[in-house]
Every structure is written in C-alpha cells, then in structure tokens.
Image (cartoon, rainbow, N blue to C red; front, top):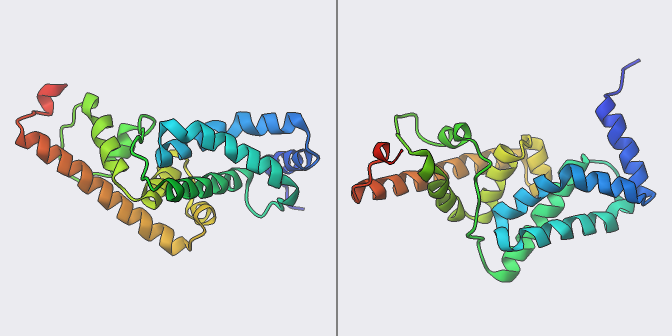
Length: 202
C-alpha cells in the first residue's frame, strides 16, 4: 500500500477545517501564506496597494472556500486569487505598478538573469537598477518572474495560477528574463556613459 505524504495529509485536514469555517484554520492559513501573497501583490501593484490586495485575497478565499475542491494546492489557489485580483486592479487603474521591490531576490538570482560575462555591479546599486528594470516590464512578465524566482512555483503551478499552458509559461519566462536583462544592461550602459564606475562605487 502506497504511503501518503504527511504534508498532503496535513493540508487535506486543514482544508476540511477551513470548509467547516473554523476560525483557527484561517488564522493558520494567513500566518503560513500571507508573506508570499503580499510579495506577489507588491511586485505587481506596488507598496501602496499591496496590503489591501493581500487582505482581499484572504477575504475572497474565505468566501470561496466551500466551493474549493482541492484540484490545486492551497498555495497555488491563493496565488491564483492574488494574480487575478492584481490583474483586475491594474486594468481598473490603468497602471503598471511602478514601485516594485526586489530586495528579497538574492544576487545569485539577479545575476542569473544577466548575460554570461563579467559585470562588476556595486551591491548598493543592484536593487535600484533591477527594481526600475522590473517596473518597466508588462504585468504578466513581472508576475511570472515573481512566481518562479521569488515564490519558487513550478511550471505547472504557474500555469495554474495564470491560466495559461505550460509551454506559454516557459516562453513568457524566457522573454521576461531577456527583457529584464536588457533593461539592466541599458541602465548599466547609461551609468557608464555618465562616468559612474561600478567598481569604485562599492
């Protein structure tokens, strides 16, 4: 007999408690997933509205929980709600979300998006350069980079969240990497043009 994963059993039990509308169960979900949902919202709509979006995500989840059938994990389901709310917000406001914080992305992730060549980037300037380049990306590309690099979702989970085929996920992720890389390089070239030496800025 195949042994069930303890994590899956724990989540199944949590879902049953949520569907019985146990207050303690919702507190556990919020404690476990709030930071992840907040960062999705932050990257897509900016700091001013991220907290409101996050609260709305959990309110929607609470209201929809009786209809939840467990086809996806709670994490994926909540991420999907967050993504949809952010897209609706962006369309309603007609904005791209310019305040995009990338402090949580490690240098390893940042440099992974850059070309395979030597670029001496001072740590103090990395965050601002990447942040501005990220803010100029279309919302779907900001979202896919966030879901993949920051939230650590797999291709099939991103496909579920964004409601697109896995092949499209891979294509969008590739394009997003290239666009972010080009944006960073453009910023680097401008700074070089104005005589700012990255190495001396350390």
